[in-house]
Length: 188
Image 1 (cartoon, rainbow, N blue to C red):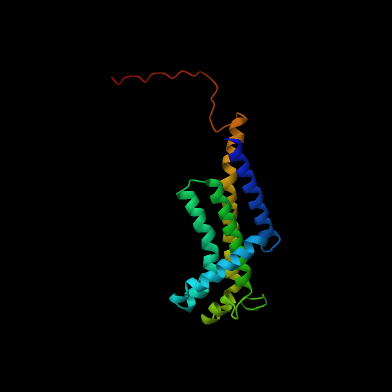
Image 2: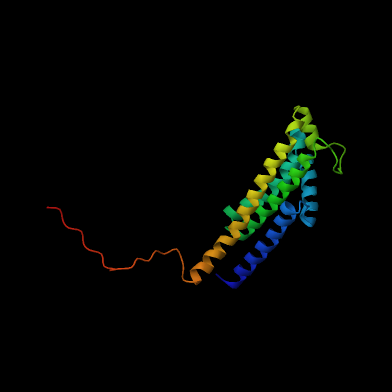
């Protein structure tokens, strides 16, 4: 493993861990990404407006999560870049945490809004399911945390494997005793 890859991996793991800490432990919006997510969220409403109100409302939060996940898929499948994919998955995780806060607020409508209508209040009220806001929010939060940890793992596992191999404790199995293999007997 070259030094540049190691440096990129450590920077990505460090910044990604910090993002996950801010989002999931402190419950705060990750400053720069949060503002970028807000722009993507609003763009989701505009892009999907031709498909009807329901789709437009869903795709605000949907696009906010799908953009980092789509980029993660691109870097995984086409660029074969674990570090970028892992970091983008952690960004997607913070977007999911941000969306979970918005979903949980649906019955209360206490968060400041850019537009006039609370997306999740409108959706859940339309389906007469405002009572499910907390459960949906919790599910999105947990899935986001899992996604973030998987993204972090994508970055850290190769580093851990490299360190393990350098210490001479790789996954090879060593067996004590004779190392010769006997020839099998021929059938009679």
